[in-house]
Length: 116
View 1 (spheres, rainbow, N blue to C red):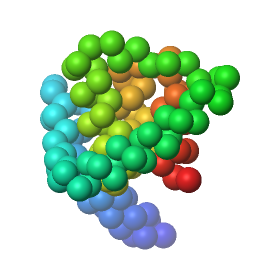
View 2 (cartoon, helix red, strand yellow):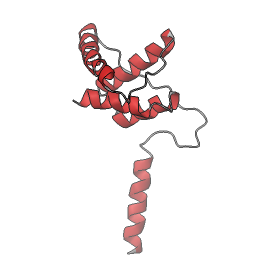
View 3 (cartoon, helix red, strand yellow):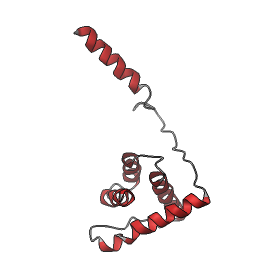
View 4 (cartoon, rainbow, N blue to C red):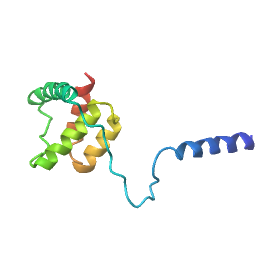
């Protein structure tokens, strides 16, 4: 019984070695992503327009303050990475909420829009 437990612990530890930096790491690596081709970006933009068109019908949606070119570029990159499946919906929510913690509903709205 102890041997099975020890093997299970070792297997679990070997998986954690593949998951990236530990919580004790001083700096977080910057996420890189594959930039879109012109054709892919056009399809992404059409999808974003479809998702955005549902905003006006949703009374619970509060606009995210993307009032600078940097914030707009960040949001575009983040949503593109989600759309292109370069990140998971959980990574998308985590990155979005790290910057805009009061907009969980809005980030979930985008996730739902891309899944439909």
